[in-house]
Image: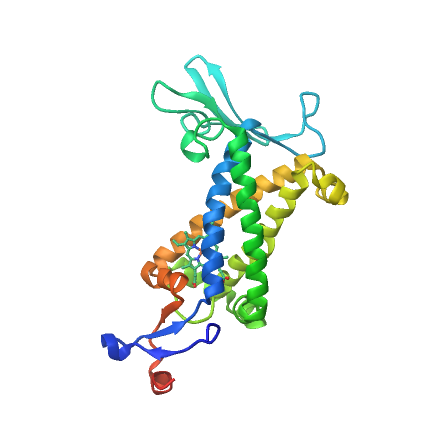
Length: 290
Ligand code: HEM
């Protein structure tokens, strides 16, 4: 059955002392790839939407008369020609070539995020919004499917819910990760539980809620949503910050997969089967006969 961890010995097959277990259910695998695909399109279309107004504010209002800009990406004329800049909390950085001023040599234009990072690559707010909202609904539906399936098949309780023993293992886990020492077991380690739980229960829901709060049509359906998030401009800033955190998660996620053994990790998230570490010498007989 899908949710049961069927152990089977692979030792006979390749002469190695390792075991393949069924680790990821078909619901985990299917939803994982749908949200990974959706987030890719949402990120690139979102950056195009951001380019239409490359400033972030805190508070309910925005405009020349307010001093509440916390991030700004733009271009300016200098003695050395046009330069791109990024300003965060009043600190200005020269980001020419990537943020603010970018393009092929001799064809640079003022744009917050460069053409290679946006969908479409040329300026087209309408298309970007269509793509963004289309994948937003796919992502929301996929997360709901993941939640229901993972409650029913016990994935949340068994694999993601942190236990007291996980907290005890945390310092050791941090040291092991720092040394790139990975244990290939059926269970997620403490840092994985925290990272995956953080993405699935905090970042993605916050992304959806702040996205809804930005939509004027939500004013009549959920008028309080905008209010509790501190206004539409603050919701937009939170939305952008969550995007940055998801991108950071993604980079670390991929680095960890590469470090832990990409073939084994990819097999588990594509087929479900995962090769665990050889059992400790004293319990080899039990593992082999499982
Ligand atoms: C936006 C992109 C992505 C996000 C948000 C994401 C997020 C996640 C989350 C939350 C889990 C845990 C799922 C669960 O247990 O229900 C997971 C597992 C996993 N993801 Fe991703 N992922 C992304 C992209 C990718 C990509 C591109 C790859 C492969 C190159 C990948 C490979 C894996 C693997 C191998 C696992 C299982 C890890 C393990 O069993 O130790 N992910 N991912």
